[in-house]
Length: 140
Image (cartoon, rainbow, N blue to C red; front, side, top):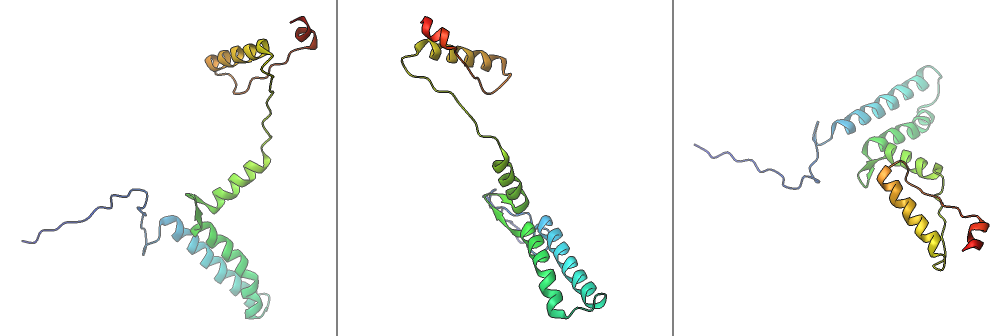
């Protein structure tokens, strides 16, 4: 009787979910879509619009390349569509603002710390803005 043993990859991060010939399901879907669009687009351009084969290939190639990159390109664990969405989100976000105070203004520093602690207890908002009027500063 032969001893059948199968080695299990201990590196979970390096594990790739194989679906077909070493490709994952996502990669197979995008490869099929790219192939279908490329062949279908070329045949449509050649037989319906009577375009030469070279021109049809040049027209369809950018579309096939983008779909292929969506399926196969991965950087920092994110695919191309996720990278594009994240880049757009970062470009569109409003800049965070903050107010600084001098160390001499101990009262205003105390107020900021007090409001921050209260907000952390209530968990209502992430940012606290404290404004002191000139009159309050002069009274101190």
